[in-house]
Image (cartoon, rainbow, N blue to C red; front, side, top):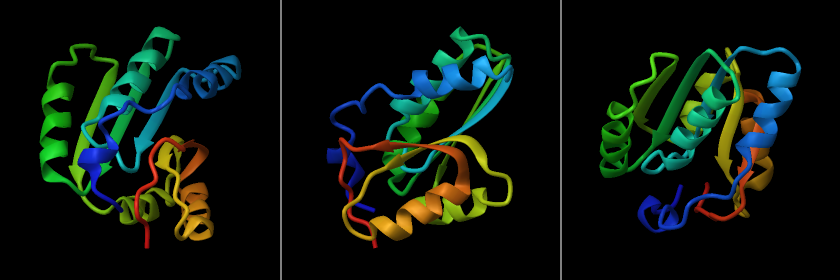
Length: 144
């Protein structure tokens, strides 16, 4: 995946609220959200907060990024969260490997960067990692 520093300068577009609303309408009270290329964690933190505001009572968020500086920043932001209904974990690692690991017990929502390179493979991988995939089309990281 590409350089995360430049990619995260702009926040990603709004998208999780619509996906979350659909799950709540179906009666879901717990949710697991994975951000496969989380940068400093802004979108994932926004998504879990939104889920809580919508009435989810158990929210698990997992963010993965290759850049250790961004993961450190995400962990600091997560440490400022005080809601016991929200659990956030940020891990340094390969986003593709993380998606492969998610396939055993797919997340409810995967936040995933769009890519022009290897798009077919990325889409197939993402669809095994979560029930719903929200593509981030604002970032075009390298993928191979």
